[in-house]
Image (cartoon, rainbow, N blue to C red):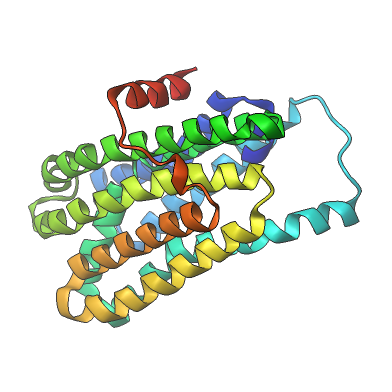
Length: 289
């Protein structure tokens, strides 16, 4: 559903789909907490309710879009194969580390890491929205004009990622004890470390979307698999000794690996420059258009 709205340039609809699930999840969790019935079961119920709601909402919103003829199924499957590996690897990168947390870190450190990930991943929706904007720009640009479009996208992604780092860090120091209680104050260092990973992930997501628009699906898959392997190795190397902070460092290393692979193998490193204030304004303006 999100891809449909990316193609149509309906970025407000994309933002709605991205934010509905976490809002319902958070609201449900706070509701059960206020009633004194917070448990693993009620948290899962809130999470699944959010997933179901956004699925229904997406179906309703897409149903209102005038129907268009698509390619035949065989052609559709053939063209989408090169992107499927990237999607699977990205999902694994986002979830596999959390699956392995308890055996690697233990229950307590895993809880700290879960809190850190929850807080640090909040700005990721901005990267997804900006990636959608630049996906369409690259897809519609003539081949000869793509170089300039790619350069602007890279600069916007890096600028948005850069400003998210201090915001997440400050939010961790102030928000973690407030939202989760003083018992989770020890999650603050891991959240601050993960803020760097958030910035890298935002920039990498924008870069990845532009490569996807250029038909570089196999490169996206390779980059995601590389990042997954690097992240897992770093987790097993750092997690047992340094707990949640070590897992956070592993996540940052994985995000850095993803970004470097996309830039270097995608021949896009030449577009990287030191972000300026104008780049920050440009990125924010594109999000608000």
